[in-house]
Amino acid sequence: MTSPTKIERPRGAHDVVPVEQPLWRLVIGEAERLCALYGYRPIVTPVFEDTALFERTSGAGSDVVQKEMYTFEDRGGRSLTLRPEGTAPICRAYVDHGMHREPQPVKLYTVGPMYRYATPQKGRYREHWQLSVEAIGSEHPSVDAEVIQLYHALLTRLGVSEFALALNSIGCRECRPAYLARLSDWLTANLERLDAPTREKAAASPLRVFDNFDAKPRAVQEALEHAPKIGESLCVACKEHFEAVRRDLDACGVPHEIVPTLVRGLDYYTRTTWEFVGPDQGAQSALSGGGRYDGLVEEIGGPPIPGVGFGAGIERLVLAVERAGVQASPWETDVFLAPSEGASRELIASWLGELRARGVASDTDYADRSLKGQLTQAARVGATTIVQVRADGATLRRRGQKDEEVALDDVLARLTS
Ligand code: HAM
Image (tube, helix red, strand yellow):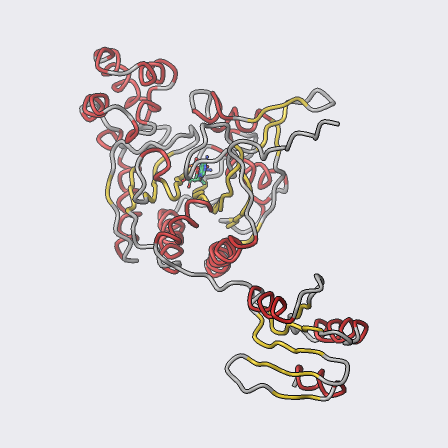
C-alpha cells in the first residue's frame, strides 16, 4: 500500500505555533489596550465580502484588484472575495448598521486575517494578520493626527525605535483632477524614461505610477522625481488641513518626513496619507499605512461621510519587536503535579479540578515519565511550584525555596493559601 502524500500548508500562509504566541499576544494585547485607551471599539466583519465592495473602493488600477484578490463564486453563483483589507468592510458595516446616526466620529478597530495573492517573502504573506483602526464621520485634522499618534505610541510601548513616518497629502475631489491632468501630460511626454510596469500604470491610473516607489529601478525613480507632485497642487482647504495635521503631530512629539511620492496603493485615499517604514528594504518595509478616505462611504452607497484610519501588519510588527530584542514572558504554569509510583491518579485529578476552579494554573504528567522526565516537563511549562506526589505524602518544591514535606490532606490548602 502506498502511503498517502503529506498535505502541505498553503504557500504564503503560516501557522502561529505556541512558542510564537507570547510575542503575538504581547503585540495584539498592547494594540487592543491602546485602542481602548483612545476610545476605539472592536468590530468583527466577515472574512469574505461581495467582490464589488473591493473592486469599487480599492480601484481597478490597484495591484490588489488587478492581481491579488482571492475571488470565487459560491454555490449560489455570487462572486465573493476573501477580504484583502479591512477598511471597506468596516465602512460597509458602518452603513449596514446605520452607524452614521450615532455620535460621530464612530471609532472602530479590528484584528483579523487578510488575503492577498502576492509572491510570498519575508514579511509578505498571502494570509497576513492586520490591525485596522478606523475613525469614521469626522474630517477634523486632529483625528488624522490621533490615529497616527496611536500607532506611534504602539511602536514606542513595544520598544520598537527603528522606524520613520512618511507623510503626504494627496488632495481632494476639488484639486486632484487638475493635478492628474498635469501628471498625465508629463507621463505622456516622458514615457520612454519609464519601465513597462510604470507605463502600464500611467495608462490605467496615473497616480499609481508612484506605487512601491522604493522598489522601482533607480532610473525610473530618478525620472519620477521630476514628475509633478500632488503636494504642489493642493487647494487651500487641503493645504490648511495638512498643516493642521502636522501641527498636531508636532505637538504630540511625532516626528515625520514629507514624502511627495507617497500615494498609497489603494484608490480610496484623499488628503492625508502616511506610512510607518521599518528598516527592511523594498515593498515589505511598511510597518503600517493609512490615510483619509472621505469618499469611500458614499462610494459604497452610504451618505457622504469622511473617514480616516490605518492598517498595520501584525507579522511585520512581531518581526520588528523581535529585532528590538523584546522578550515576551513564556506561558506560566503555577503548579505541576508530578506523581510517582503508587500515587493516586484520582487524587491528582480531583486536585487539578479544585486548583483550576480556584484560578491556579496547573498541569500534570500524562506520559508516564520518570521523575527526572517530569521535572524537565515541569520546567518546560514554566511551573513555579512542583508537587512530587507519593502514596503516603508529597514534597512541595517552590522555586527559590527549601523543599517541604506535606501530608496529602494538607496539599490543597498549602497550594491555595
Ligand atoms: P495597506 O498598506 O495595503 O493598507 O496594508 C496595511 C499594512 O498591512 C501594511 O503596511 C503592512 O504592514 C500590512 N500588509 C499588507 N499586505 C501584507 C502582506 N501581504 N503580508 C504581510 N503584511 C501585509 C490597507 O490595507 C488599508 N486598509 C489601510 C487603511 C486603513 N487605510 C485606511 N484605513
